[in-house]
Structures are given as C-alpha cells and as structure tokens.
Amino acid sequence: MSQYGVQLKTTEDVFYELCRQNPDLRLERSAKGEVIVTPPTGWETGNKNAEINRQLGNWARQDDTGKIGESSTGFKLPNGADRSPDASWVEKSRLAQVHLEQRKKFLPLCPDFAIELRSPSDDLDTIKAKMEEYIACGLQLGWLIDPEEKTVYVYRPGAVVQKLENVNEISADPELPGFVLDLREIWEPQL
Image 1 (cartoon, rainbow, N blue to C red):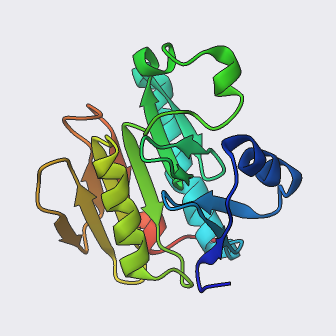
Image 2: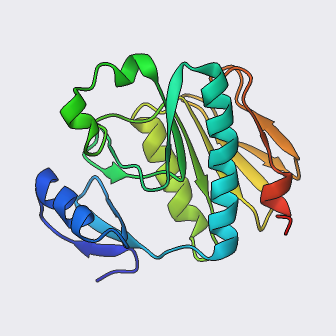
C-alpha cells in the first residue's frame, strides 16, 4: 500500500461494486488503475464543502442549464480514471446524451465545472495534479480552493493556472454565467 492507495487490477463493474459495498469509504481510481482511499473529512471541511454545494446548487436551480453533483458523485473520465470532485456541474445537454442506466453508476464523462476543496490532510501537489487531469479530460473550468492559505487556483483549458489570494468571491463567468461563489463562509465559517 502506498501513501495514496494500492494498485488493483479491476474492471469498471468490480470497482463500482467495491464502492457500492463500502459506502463509508471515499474511493477513487487513477488512470493507471490505482485505487485511492481518501479519509473522511473533519467537520470544518465538510461544512465548507456543504456551503460550496449549497451556493452552486442555488445558482444551478435558477440557471437551469445543468445539474450539480456533490463529493460522492463519481465520474468515469475519458482517460479511464474514476474521480469524484467535491462539487461538480454538468450541462443538461451533455447529460441527455448519457443513457439512464449509465447515470445510475459513475457518469461516463468529465464534468464541465469542478471544485476541489483542500482539507488539512490533503497534499497540495496531489490535488493540483488531479485538477490538471480534469482539464486534460475536458473540464472547462476548475477551482482548487485552499482555505488555510485563502487561495483559489483557477484552471481553464489552454491557460496558465491563475492564483487568486485573499479574495472574498470568485466568478465563474463566462463558463457558468452569473455564478459567483461567496468565499467568506469558506475562509471564516460562522457558528
């Protein structure tokens, strides 16, 4: 076993069944077939993630052009990896192309937008590599949010990663018109 997982040779169905039978574990699989076990988050990170998903969900309901997924939503990326970003959004037109039976398992596509929230136990370089993987697989916009450093890394295809420090909000325009994430609850959660 390595720091990030153990190499297992499994089929897509076997990996899905492993995830289904272990709902308390957050499992991902790299493009190389490495199964990655991520520990549960602490309360503070979970609360921040819930806030991110609440804001994204509120916007998505008003916009009505796509659907969101939270941190347990799995995506089968084009490179063969199975990933689950902390928050994600997929255009309805792309979802409509996925057969209903396939939507019951990991979506066989890359989300259009994804957010990864760094928890205290996460290695920053590992999450940055995951964001690069999403971009290589078709992600249109990605945010890596690091609450401890009050930093957001913005990923777009064909662009240099943008690093924003000490901002209170971030806009997803033009990819998600009108979506602005209020970061104040992420930086300093209120009781």
